[in-house]
Image (spheres, rainbow, N blue to C red):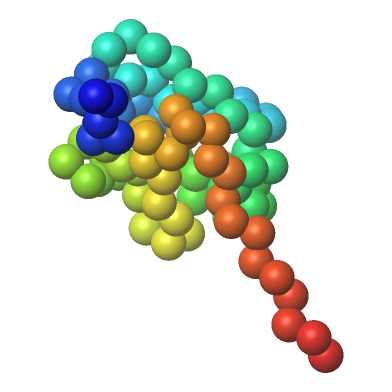
Length: 90
């Protein structure tokens, strides 16, 4: 039986950015790269805001306090972009 519980190797080791990608290194040696366009808050953030991140969730999450943004290693491994926010009708 497969479990959706994260494995210890899926803890986050490091986070970095290129101009259009977020790159997350895991303790098990894997590296996840996903488009910044999946995460609009990170895409439109300044370099300083992106650089101000903390590991959260017992090592399985990333939190950007300046942006109120949170990502998890499990979500990144599943290829889950941020949910789209529907605009309110005028």
